[in-house]
Image 1: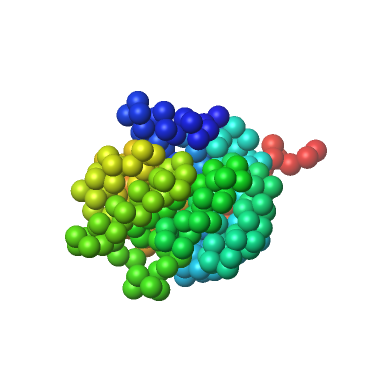
Image 2 (image 1 turned 90 degrees about the vertical axis):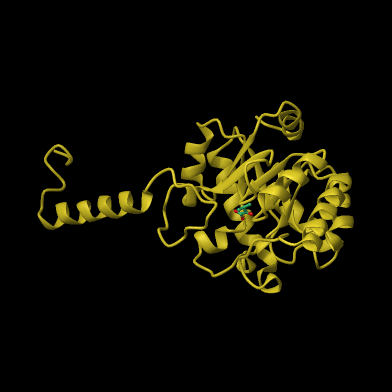
Length: 263
Ligand code: KIV
């Protein structure tokens, strides 16, 4: 199984890290049989699995439940669980309770969006023995403050701010940092200047790894097509045609057959 040392080693050896966001046991079981390096139980589950319009709606109960399901499905994978909305903004005790719940659900590390006021909390969590993955650039929990899903760090000031935050996360003890929706050049600069690996989503080809949400890379939602997404399947059409076929067989009374029935 990957561990926090493998992350650093991969960066040193210039081997790219693959991470997939996954939310449930049955897909985790499939991922467990692949070579991907790690699984993220992302708070994007509020949108993908629960139909909310943003990750603001992910609660610690949701994160805990989905983390436990993924860990049961993928016992051989390193699993990182997202700290949900505001869990690091209501004081240390609140943050540590959330960390405890995610780790006891089976996660091997937690991911925290942002830097700034989160830094002392991140330091404390790391000191307590829990690996922390940072997350900079487009941080979806701050979507209302960012004014929507847009590329971050496009001008010099905001680019320099992300560079500074990445250094701070590195110093605070994060073992890796997700960079979401930033220009390629910034993805490259940050990746070359921090000691820990960067894992990009919409951050260009130069980050030390890449992450995509499983449903997105499978093509489950034809309406979701950001520039950074590569679809490796068309699960939307596969599911739709399979279910339609089942419906037709039931309607036409061709299912179940004699072979599919008990004598
Ligand atoms: O919630 C999530 O799935 C994420 C990744 C897209 C990085 O944070």
